[in-house]
Image 1 (cartoon, helix red, strand yellow):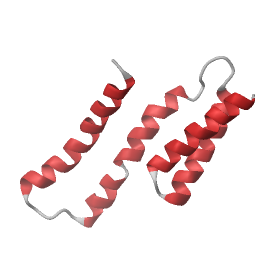
Image 2 (cartoon, helix red, strand yellow):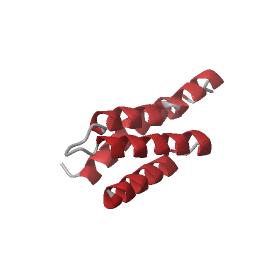
Image 3 (cartoon, one colour):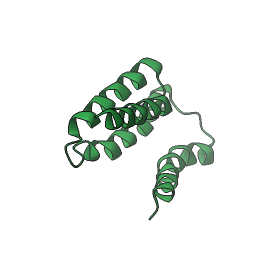
Amino acid sequence: MSPILTIMLMAVVTYLPRFAGFILSGRKVAPFWLRFLHFVPIAVFAVLITPSLPGTSGETPLRLVAAGLATLAIWRLKSLWVGIVVGMGVFWLLRYLF
């Protein structure tokens, strides 16, 4: 399966159940549950990324540095996509330099 197709299917699996029940029920959702569901995408992202951190061919330190900076970016800017861009950019830069 291609990576793009996998990402698209994971997006559907993640977001469709999240909102389908709310749309179909027509009820107001308690603020507690809205706050709780806010963390689902970042939790899924962490579960998908964590197993690949050790990497191959001695890239573990580079991956950990990139993951740490991505975590910092997500924490400070409150944006998952910024963290992905920072993490991948730092990893590619470190890989090129070392």
